[in-house]
Image 1 (cartoon, one colour):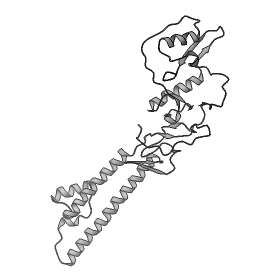
Image 2 (image 1 turned 60 degrees about the vertical axis):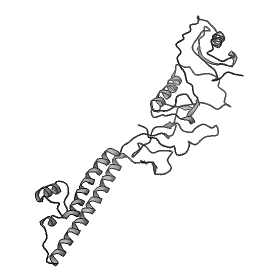
Image 3 (image 1 turned 30 degrees about the horizontal axis):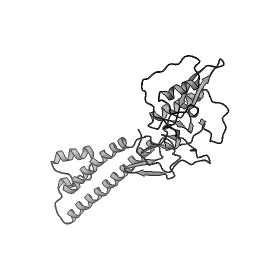
Image 4 (image 1 turned 90 degrees about the vertical axis):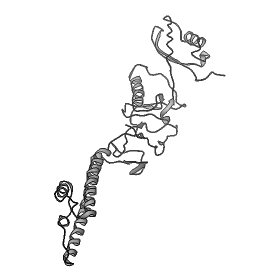
Amino acid sequence: MYCDIVRIGPAPRNPRGLPLSAPSAKTLRLLPLKLLQTFPPYIAKMSSTVLLVIDSSYVRIALRIYFTLVFLLIGFLADGCLAIRNLRRLLDRKPIPLTSMTGWLTNVSLLKATMGFRRLPGGSWFGMLMFVCTFLSLVSDIAVSGLVKTVTVPSRCLFGTGLVVPDSNSSISSVPPDNGATYSVAAQAQLTSAANGGLVGIYWKANRDLTFRADELDLAGQWNCIDINDEIEYAAGTSIIAIGEDLIQRGYLYGPGNQSSAVRTPYENGTFSHLILWDTQTPKS
């Protein structure tokens, strides 16, 4: 799943204004999968969530060692206090209750002593402390197992190899085929971004990274299409200009036709397929 997290700074930009890295989901909550390229600090805290660039197994081990040492220290100190209290009673020639001679108990031993004496071992205060520490010890172990998880959150990661849209100063001599490898990479990037909760549109950069999750920095353009269930058929050999003019008359394109954009797959016999016509979002003045 994805955490609600504030991105720590935008991705660095090159002179063309394009992001140097595509957004990815490789990040985490209490344990990330990989080092986050965007997080300068070793640890980032977002509300009640702590982000660590450490493997989850190491975090669980560290927390279990920490809690174990804490409860061992509490038991060691409390046992010493019980011994000192009994020693002072002996020096004062006072009787020592049998429940005060049990020392520090936890878990099953504590339960058996309580049931056997029908009283709290160690006295009221130390007996309550034994039960509280036993309860917290169990809760801490369950909490470490249940709350320390590897999850994904949005981040900016290295781009690597893929498709890059050139800037406006670059000249394009040919349009790549819309049913080849170029199309597969672009289409997969859109599907991957949508599956990861990102935006869908025309990206400045795209690759085959399955953790890709696009945001506003990655979009060169976007659309919102609604199927109006009005299928139109044209005879073979109909020109693109004729199709464009017909769509303008039907109100599906704003036009005029020479300002509309089109892409197609041409054939040697003069026909074409995979025709796509698009126009601006609002009428041209």
